[in-house]
Image (tube, rainbow over all chains, first blue to last red; front, side, top):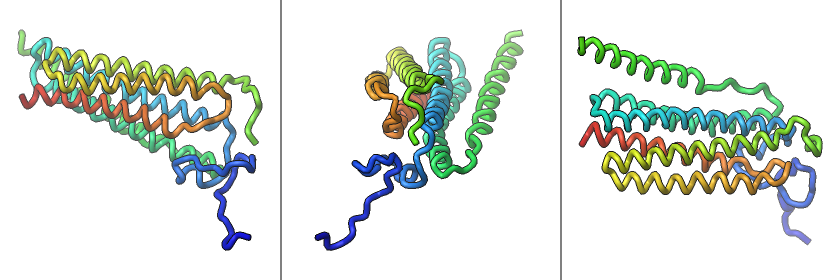
Length: 143
Length: 103
């Protein structure tokens, strides 16, 4: 005879055999299991954001390589630093976004908009403008 | 409700391919960062990049074994790992650029 009632976590898969212990609890501890296809789509979206961050990092590393090979001014390395930092931040935002959307799917709420999108657009524009400014300056100084 | 047994939209397969794309791209960028580190003359950073390549390969291999079933398995740990690899390469790239700015 149990001395206390054993608390079992919610079992949304309905199997009744093993309780759902998936992490993070902030996501899997609420709501019910959504359609598998929505979860997979959320996963693919998170991976797309990760690849976007990776592309920025790749651009930063490439700029760093070119700057060291061609002996370009320090500005190019500063742009490389900005690109790498932005890429890392976007990869982290992919994780936060996945959690938010998976929670909304489980609770049957409207999906939240992608918060990183304006930052991505601003970051890419900033890097582009800095590089364009450097190119113009370099061309003018050679005339 | 767990959805149809065989998804005509091929979502599990598409997701597996997305993981492969991401893991391979991460390994490629780690390789580039490692080569740049060697060229710039920073072998310590190159070792870090090599470790990240191994991590990216682990992600690709681990994901391909996970996707042998159509059921949705644990996404979060693997998402965390691949995002960590990207943050790691970002740190390596940042260090390479800083290496030139502050010699």
